[in-house]
Image (cartoon, rainbow, N blue to C red; front, side, top):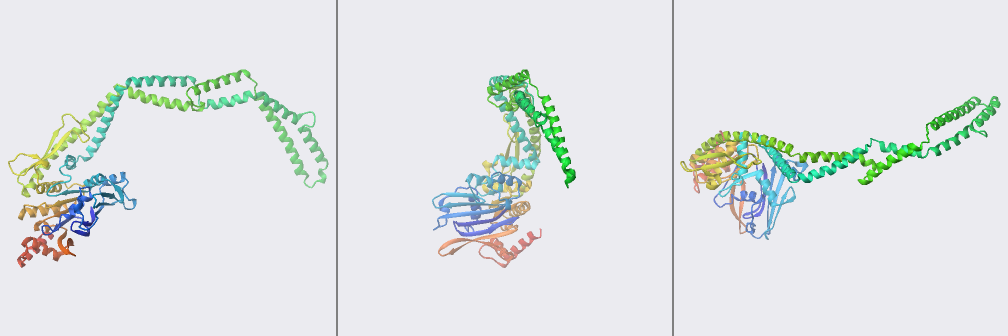
Length: 556
């Protein structure tokens, strides 16, 4: 929803700030007062071409800013993907554009510099503008398809179909590449298979390398270890001054003087503990020595195994401890290559995906055809109430060859504006006013929750009056229940239906003409409706009629 609009030094506007609200906002004023400036500003913000002649006389630049509250999830995702969302105010965005006297233009979304193309893309999601000369969205095939899908309740199915479409294309490309490069892939398989076979033939066990290195160290140093163990054993039980003798002598000496020692018991216990520890040490050393084997034959076997592992590791320029991880990686790569070169399997997978796509596309197509008939009838009925005597038709035809991301249908909106005439594509026959009425009938019928959330009509009621203008106003008000609607109108019947009423006037200030904007209260609104009814000379009857019209709308 549009929250506010700021305009500076643009044509007749020196500086203007407008707040907008939900529902229907009507804009009125004399011809040439500058009513369309607001719509022009919105179009410029979202990428319309701009000339330097739009800059207010005597100024060097014009600037435009629009603040929006974004509630639609699709728009939020678009903003998040591009990093435009302020996390503190994720529902609010500000779009701004500055145009200078040299024709240069700068564009921003939440203070981030963007291209005009980006602003235009965002604008197509936020608002739909219908003028006497153009419609931003309704004439686009994608918009027409999306509107029909929403009405048919097929929007979610189309999203699923788009995923299937991408899967089909991926498989088609994969199969084509496999066929083109099958020989190369087969050669790669063979080479990789040989590498894997060689590593597998090595039979390297988990943790075997570490165990081999430890065993080699033990076998290679067996003599040295036994020699040193013998030396230690001699220290414990040797003939001269062994630890055992020293311990015994120490105990005897202490026992002799024990009666004279205040802590004799503790001292004797310590000496006994030393004797026990020496005995335990001797026992453990004997156990270790008995386990150590001098085995040149086993050492030769271990050395040979280590050399074998080292040799294969050097061949593939890896460390021995990397052999098993490398084997796993090669096995995984070979599995992928086998899958990629299994043409039969790929072809079968593709056929299954194509079948799934076609089944869902046909289901969507049936929904579209059923919905198209209903939508055509409803919109045609509304057009008749809007003084268009012709017919509206949504044509759904099958694409004979190409599948698309959105299905197998070609969708066209056809219209004739006079009874008995040939139906033609909407973009070829509709004038601005007629197109706006078609858009109004469509939006009222659909009551969609998808973007855009703001719909702008510029003189949708041009060339009509009386009861038809009243119907237009009623439909605009109805549309304003689900959408934010802004409408420039010359018809009092339509103006009466607004939830808010803005009056645009011209005045002279300091020798320059300026446009002024006024939010009308009830009293001023009666006066403006009376002006629209009676022109320059406003009579009591005209005023009474204006009051009656406003009261009638208020009580609906």
